[in-house]
Image (tube, rainbow, N blue to C red; front, side):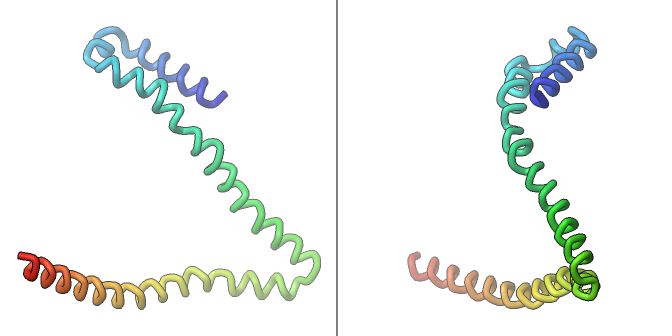
Length: 118
């Protein structure tokens, strides 16, 4: 239904812009957009949006259930949960310096390999 609505909006917009605009466009590009381009949104509508909804609803539902069962545990979770992104950033910074070093060594090694091959 969503894809049909998008196709309808695309056609209405093309008609609204008029024949002069349509003449300046490539027919193949518009046809591809109306068919394959909109069909390519299947994964977005069928997989991504439902998973996004679950990613929002499930943690809230779990936290609500924990609050009703044990409010102290819920308080601990609420206080420590924001620390996760902080630790991810710290780990990323530590990993970045190591990866930069490895990249330099790999670049030097590949340069040496090219010299040997030459």
